[in-house]
Amino acid sequence: MLPVQGGIYMLVGPGGNVTIQTGKDGVLLVDTMFAPLAQRIAAEIKKLTDKPIRFIINTHVHGDHVGGNEALQKMGVAGAAQVAAGGATLIAQANVLNRMTASGQTTGWPNDEYDTPTKDFFFNGEAVVIFHEPKAHTDGDSIVFFRRSDVLSVGDIFTPERYPFIDIARGGSINGLIGALNHILHLTVPERLQEGGTRVIPGHGRLCGEADVVEYRDMVTIVRDRVQDALKRGLGLEQVKAAKLTLDYDPQYGPGEAFVESVYKNLGGK
Image (tube, rainbow, N blue to C red; front, side, top):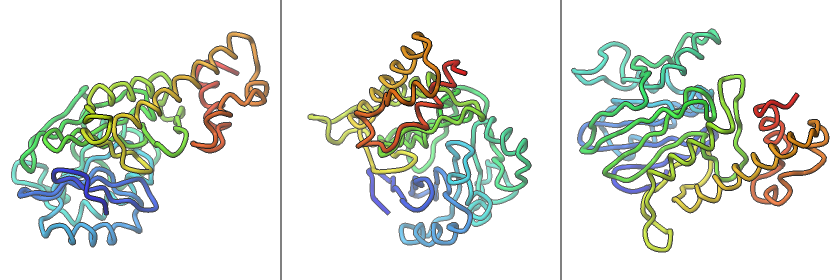
């Protein structure tokens, strides 16, 4: 558990990072890791507050971010003005629910899905603004902006210690991902000399600021442009892989073959 700023904490574990907001109104979670970890997540929350879980927001549909939905939702309570049945109010972009139902998943569904560019509400003394990032990591990505605390929780759009995973089968795209990273940069404001200011909680990895997102956005854009150039020159996938287009970034982000292949296919390569 890492204090971020304001009433925001970041919980790190075997799944995706969990963002926790606490205050007089209760607890808000962004993402829920894996189902077997729900009791341990609840125990960590109890160390911060005895208030109930009121809201859960999912950044996307992948199991390492939504696995604990059902158990943690049942532990929570909905406010009188919120959805009354089933515990805490669970919010996600509509495509998250569509993907869950299409895959046969029968539990952990959002009961307050949205299908507009943004959704906002006021909780624990601050505005909570949810932005849909279309066709980025998936087609149901959300980023969550805690406006008074000045913290962004962005899911797997940004993973500073690994190359992005573009889930093409679930509507993800390289250009949508770059667009979402640029939107994050539009919302972040650094303190003097780039340290401090708006904090960014990634889907996996360390707590970050604007400079970290700039570095990551630049890497993703440069690799995209290199692959695009290779496609224009008529190179096939194996030739693109052999060209090692991520060689200069691999020491920082790991092997880049899978990322290059997904970019190649997403840009129209066969």
